[in-house]
Image (cartoon, rainbow, N blue to C red; front, side, top):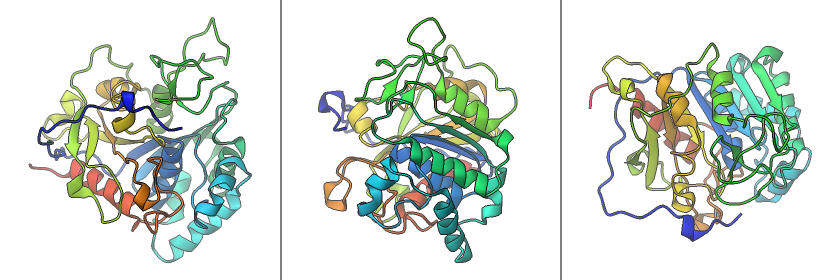
Length: 334
C-alpha cells in the first residue's frame, strides 16, 4: 500500500554515526520480516544457513519463488507456489556454492505466520514455506506455523495503533491472542518470534529501555545496485556495548512501504523487539530499503524477484550488504 508522506521520518542534516564494532556473535544470527521482508528473511536464512540459527516469517513466501522475475510475483504471493520447487532451487544454488550447504537449514528454528484476514499474501505462500522446511528436514519441534489469527497484512504488536483487521500504514496492528476482538491479552509477535528463534527461557521484556535506537550510515556497507537507503537503524542494549559482551544479533526486515522514511519509528522503535532484546542481550539491526522507481522498486520492497540482480545467492546486492552490517557488528575494536 502506498504510505502517507505525513508519516515520513524527519530529514536531518546531522552526520550519521558509524555502525559500531561490538564483538557480537555472528555465528548464531536470527532474522525475521514482514511481506517482502518475510521473503527476504526466508532467502537470507537459506543463503546463510551456516550462521543463521532461526527465522521468523510473517506473510512471506518460499526461497527462490521469484527467480522467474516480476511476472511470477502475483503467483508467489496469492497463488500456490511449490515448497518442493523452493528446495530444488536451493539445491541448484547449493551445488554452485552460491548458498551455504542446505544441511544447516534443518537445524534452524522456524516461526511462520499467516493472518487469516490477510488480503495481500495468501495462505498458499506460507503453506509452501512450511512444505519447504519439512522437506529439508526441520523437525516438528523446531517449526511453528500460526494461521488462525484474524489478522490483516501487518506485524502484530502490543501497542500498535490499528486493530487486527486494518490494512494500512504503518502495517503494525494489535490482535487478541485467542483470535477474538475482546477479552484476551494482545498478541506480542516480536516476543513470540524471539522466544521461538532463540529458544530456552527468555527474560521478560524491559519496562524501561537501557538505551535508545540509533540511526547509522548504511552507505559504507552497501553493494553496488543494492537500491538500499543511506540510513539504517540499530538497537544496542547498554550491556552489549561492553567489551566481551558477545551479544546475539537479530535482523528485522521491514515490509514494502514500511521503511522509516514512510512510517517514522513505527518499526525500529515501537514494534516491540527492543524491549525483549534489552533484557536478553540481543542487538537488533533494522536495515532499510526505500522506493526507487528507476531500479524497479517503486514500493520500497526488499528484492525477492531480481530487480537488483542475483537476489537468491550470497552475491545478491542486498544480501551481501546486510551481511556486511552483521560482520561489522561482529568486529572488535573501533
